[in-house]
Length: 453
Image (cartoon, rainbow, N blue to C red):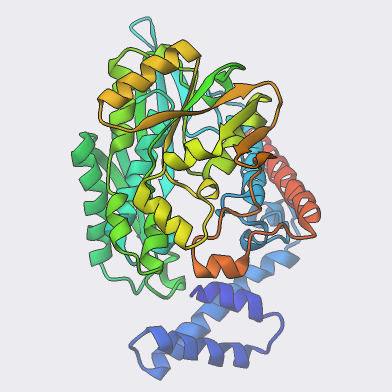
């Protein structure tokens, strides 16, 4: 529980005595302290929040703008940030716009909506491409830190690999709320290090802090793992896909999302199916066969499943993608697919962690042979065309493959929240757009003022 957030929400509408009493009771729910100490904590938080609110009436407009943020009046949950659907993709494009507005350059920037970012450097008169990526732990794996660490490490390494880079290092950013058991830190790190040992990529740096410091009660774990990779060849970014290319897909056994689905439905045996490093085997097979320069694009099927990834590729390239539904389903781990069927979860709308490769037909044949020889299942699932949309060929015909407002609901709480686009989605987008533009203006103003000092 965010006690500072609680005070901010209520102090303007309720009298201070009521807010303090309610907050004291909530603190006592979490803390093994006496009434007087809890009451003192509540009073301190209220005083601090009241001091911050004085900025609203500060006479200096520049100071107000510096300290406050441009409000959109659209919440993360309402627009579906983190839920890997249409709303999430929209907000990420706005973030990319802010980054693209800066006076610094990247070979592959967030505007490409790719798996990782790339900068080009020159070493000994030769071009070297440095790829970075970062992924956050699945929010529902807070109580299962080893799994959280294992899967987020896999995810960030996979994001580096699909950009055509050889991962060389990882770093960890670990945040545990005030009442969390320190053992969670160790279990999470052990999960990351298990992957590190399996693929021989060292964990070299990190940070460990509390979630919200003294302001957040509870034991929620929030963390991320980043990775760095290098390559002598240009990255296999999505924008390199060409009409006529063949689309290949490796078998996907899932990661954090599938583990979460299994755990919260009591289907624990499926969790073991997710504990593999086949994506590294597949990537290394392409590297060792010398096929990387000939591959046009690679990505992992994660962000809202194939529906989301296909949508982002068409957005980036302007090309179309055509898929065969039966071929895709055949590339999902049988036990995972059986679970998804039993729970009525769309396999195309959830992250199954497959490796998708886009390449010319003659190159695709070589890639398929190399990955198969490495012991990883792979098959052709579609092709790239010039239609500008993603299409799915099914037993009954053809349909457009579109992302849902949120990824396929894979827990009971997600089914309750739903994945239907809200009626006011366009209005929310306008508000978010304005907040993004305001953030850019603020950045420009602050940078100019600092430079003019």
